[in-house]
Length: 387
Ligand code: FNR
Image 1 (cartoon, rainbow, N blue to C red):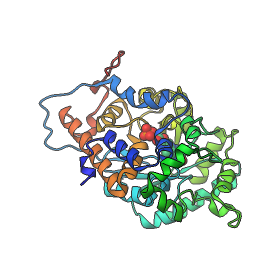
Image 2 (cartoon, protein in one colour; image 1 turned 60 degrees about the vertical axis):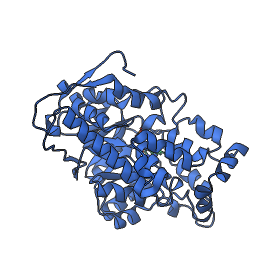
Image 3 (cartoon, rainbow, N blue to C red; image 1 turned 180 degrees about the horizontal axis):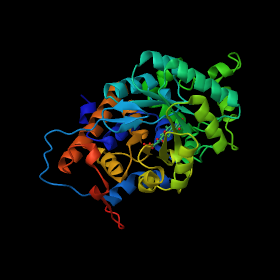
Image 4 (cartoon, helix red, strand yellow; image 1 turned 30 degrees about the horizontal axis):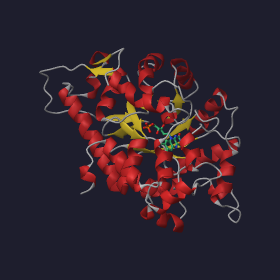
């Protein structure tokens, strides 16, 4: 099939670019300001060499682990992404089903386009809900109660978004709020009818988890965005994390932690893990690449907490490097969105198959027959980047 011609994440990205109107592709693909962090997140992995062992028996390889207390077939999970229905009509259901088939955790965004109850009902696999601490703490508490009732296994609290990042590609394309569609972007929609026509019938912009908060009569998609945009709270602090940890009383990762000191503080505040993340370079441009922070963060929190490297993973070998540096697992955003946009659920399937094959092949070539054997001696940082 067409998808089988994709040999890697880069191929799926190109397929997604062909299928989507340019403003939609740029919304996935872009980052903040000069996109320095976006680029660096991925290229930072190339600065690490993998140092192999030889003549180890690699006839079988053990890769199972636990993330958020849940079993995973290998140390990868799927990050939360908003507005998923914009990229493919089957939206979150398609991604979650593919993740479950591969034995991986899926996370649903607050800004998702599928109600968390509907997702939980359709999908028995391990799942995490990405939450915010909103101005209205009652709204956050309501999410906690809904997640518990629906059977979500963990929460990821995103803390790198006190304001929206400056995504200049979205401004140029008109995919800002309110949308200002240019002639060029309208033309791009017209040239991608297989995306654009179904979008006219169903709402691709429904923030399904919060839409009940907005008067159904008044609710165009924009009033929804206004409502949720008005809920972002710049005064959130560590006491709020303590409150959320008590309220939820289950696996909780703080997503967006970058430093060892904040990671320590997260655990002291009741979190069970951290997702080292700069939001895929979509928020603070210039923030370090997550992979470069793993060792220090692991040293600060000790062995027990989940340390998840989120951002820039484009090869299975990247996951091997992150694990050797001390991560529990890696998490991906854009790669599965490229797969989804390229071909719906089979596209996500293809992406997860490719990354898994790369991961296992890398372990085999590096002489590692059990992920628990991986340690810092298997990676070495080069001060000069290899291209
Ligand atoms: C995101 N991300 C994100 N994070 C979050 O906490 N809540 C959200 O609603 C979203 N929405 C979102 C949309 C899109 C289109 C992208 C690409 C990303 C960030 C995401 O969870 C993750 O941190 C990054 O995507 C990781 O970087 P990579 O894998 O894309 O390089």
